[in-house]
Amino acid sequence: METLRVLFVCIHNGGRSQMAEAFLNKYGGKKFTGESAGLDAGILNPIVVDVMQETGIDISANKTKDVFDFYKAGKRFNYVVTVCDESNAERCPIFPGTIEKLHWSFKDPSALEGSYEEKLSETRIIRDEIKNKILKWIETN
Image 1 (cartoon, one colour):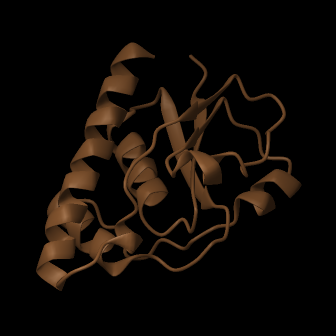
Image 2: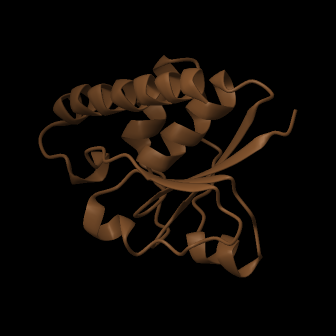
């Protein structure tokens, strides 16, 4: 069986795409391999690192990556999944050979306001939405 390569893209590669990559790689078995990148690579969101640690997944050593570097390197993916808002998703390059481009919009953890605890609580909700979407998608593919 061929391993399906999946690229998750968001704005900064600091939160949503990192979580999606981690969940796919944890639950996708040998059928899937995930990577992630950003349209404007930024920094890894420390609150995202904390909420992922709660699930037993350590992404603290992950680096943010630029989607255009992947494109220029000629990387090929079976699926490209944008996890940002629709207007930013349109900025994602078209990768040759991609079977399907999907768009799953999730709230941006870096745009959350409030105390650390409030941001942590809202980021947990986003994390769980991403995890559930990944698990359902794995089941149907």
